[in-house]
Length: 234
Image 1 (cartoon, rainbow, N blue to C red):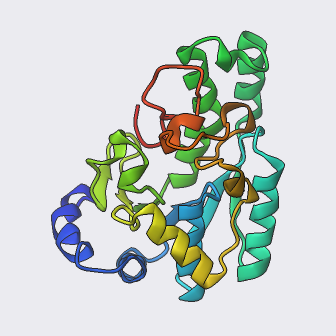
Image 2 (image 1 turned 90 degrees about the vertical axis):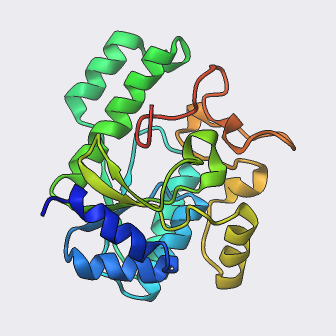
């Protein structure tokens, strides 16, 4: 049976389970074929905690775009040390990155949405495709509250672009619920979150938000767009 045809039965089961039980079920059903993409955000740190505490056979990976905050890279090291695990890091392909910078300049993403999306593709989307290749389940830290684009997502769904089943275990968690869990379990997190950086990506493309602003307002703030990089939607 194809992966896509598994979705209906999986959805009925997953919707009744807690995030950690859902992760355990999928790692049992798809042994060695479940991977988790972590950007080291707060949601991702919660999922890493679940995986480590239950010793689930799920490979955690992260994308180093070459433009991350130092605080993000430091958090990666702190997370590995706390949980005694290795996070596999994927980098952009050197020729593609060099060609991009030669064509648009080091900060060409400020000049147009097209340039920014091309930068995201080279630094994030293409490495993601390599990281997901050969796997069956892609675990993410998406929450429905994060943006209008994500409010219609299901906990488990088919990702057409990558031909893989995507599992969003924290989809229905609130921001307050997530923060409470982090504090209760002393989960390491990026100190930039305490400085009003809610959604953290590449340093040149991320700013702190003001009180009352949408959580995604700090991403690509200079443009009018859907505030997505192409990993989870256009």
